[in-house]
Amino acid sequence: MSTSPSMLTILGATGSIGLNTLDVVSRYPDNYEIFALTAHTNIKKLYELCLLHKPKIAVTSTEIQAKQLADSLRAAGLKIKIFFGEEGLSAAASASEVTHVMAAIVGGAGLVPTLAAARAGKIILLANKEAIVMGGNWFLSIAEQAKAVLLPIDSEHNAIFQCLPINLENAKLDDSRRPDVKKILLTASGGPFLTRPLETFSTIRPEEACAHPNWKMGRKISVDSATMINKALELIEATLLFSMPASQIQVLIHPESIIHSMVAYKDGSVLAQLGNPDMRTPIAHALAWPNRIESGVEVLDLISTGQLNFLPVDFQRFPGIALGRQVAEARDCSSIVFNAANEVAVANFLAGQGLRFNAISEKIDEVLQLLSKETSRKAEGIEDILALDAKTREITQNLCQRGN
Ligand code: NAD
Ligand code: MG
Image 1 (cartoon, rainbow, N blue to C red):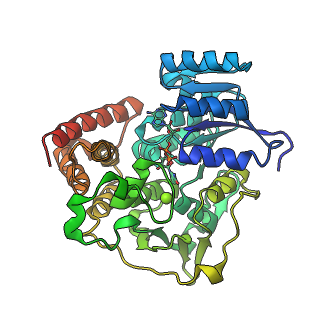
Image 2: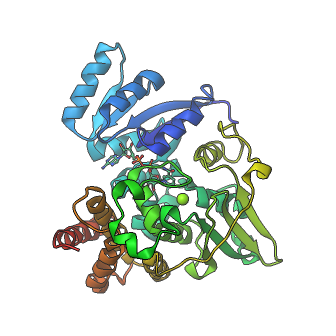
Image 3: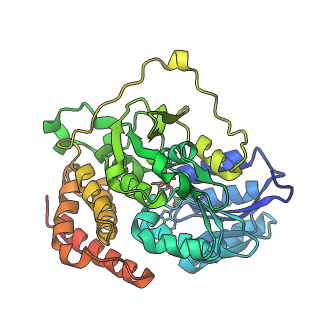
């Protein structure tokens, strides 16, 4: 590892990925310093994290929260600068002292600060898949111009990254070896409803959808896993991160979540990355890349793991994945609509406002069709992306309120 410590900003520090990141870096206090921690609503947790990790900066969403936090930190004798709002997040992500940014805000709210990190040429540990799905190739070109490095945290993309021939200079698939790669096998657990009778899907409650069998995650991604729209987002994410057509990416159900994804080569070799389902492994991998550090995760015991199973995707059960494939193949603005419609539909389902579980993918389909004339083009920049995102959110919210 390098001798000078890495300076880390964690966007979304109070979330599942944020806390797992702090767990890993606190094992190496000489190698990682915390520059900034950010949170949206859980200011009590952010205060506790500030006491423990003593960042230079903490970021809240509102000015009132910022004042509250500043008062309590001052009372505790800590000198930490407090910023707030999108500008505060972007400043924390792009400050000159920062080397690494963990992008772990959930949803579209993470796009602008992650973009600020990209523009500033940071090493970005990308958990916030919605940001890349929205930003698409435009975001990638901005990152490339600024020589930012994108390291995937999503366990599947991190696994694919570990199995692909990666260029150490830019952390991208080595183009001279691209023809050797036949396909990517993107694995999916299938979530909590892999075998639940289809006719009962309309009665699924938010708590049931959030009870993932293998992973403990935030509520939004848990619902995405239950609808398998998470895998659809990941399919789009993989086409972008590895610059690979969707036709070369096969989604495969693997209920045990032990193999995190695979890469098939032209000589018949299939390379897989395996491990206990614990996000600290991909986080530690990306933090130390191209070196390795301890993550706190036990090495897999294959004897006690037992059988590994594989199944094809049932598109009737998980229609969102078929929609996601169309979007991934189109490589246009439909990914912005897909993501925003999903976020709004999931929020309505989680709020218990009467949106059925299966209505989530129905609403996305409806909105994609409604906006189809506006989406068959490339995004032109951040204003363009945010405008289509806002329009989609408004239309979806109206559709959700109109009933299901
Ligand atoms: P989470 O809900 O546990 O945490 C989200 C974090 O984002 C919190 O710190 C919250 O304060 C912050 N946040 C939420 N809304 C915000 C807003 N409007 N403005 C600013 N900050 C906001 O979510 P998570 O499970 O940690 O997931 C984070 C991201 O990582 C998601 O994009 C998810 O898809 C991705 N991811 C998570 C996992 C996992 O195991 N949890 C695995 C792979 C990918
Ligand atoms: Mg994943």
